[in-house]
Image (cartoon, rainbow, N blue to C red; front, side):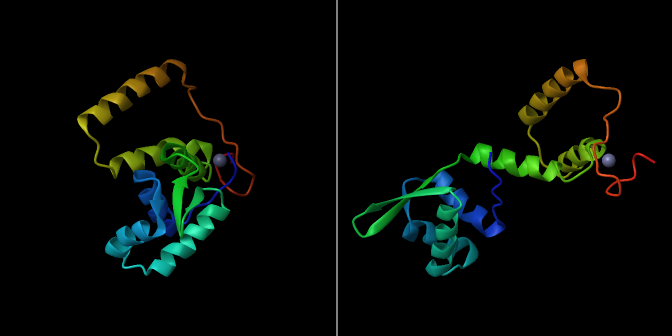
Length: 142
Ligand SMILES: [Zn+2]
């Protein structure tokens, strides 16, 4: 996928459009005015940016514009998670995921799925993960 950084404010807009589409800027604005006290102009600015980035598609309907997501919520969340994990040394990915799990409220079924995944991964996991960092950006090769 193309590199598409979505700001925290843009995520707020995307979540509304992922939940309901097609949707007009006015209806998106109403949700975000409630949650964030944003003026409609703020939402419209964010919508314009998201269309430019290719995250949203728009179609005119009379004097209104309908907005649709151009990318699914699932793939956007995956991209954001991949981007985060690509910023740490491969040796630290495990402890980063552990930290995320410690800070998360997980249901019994979430935990069962994770348990299953861990069981699967254990079959082929290396004893140690190799570091792929640029020298000077981590100290694990010393
Ligand atoms: Zn490293």
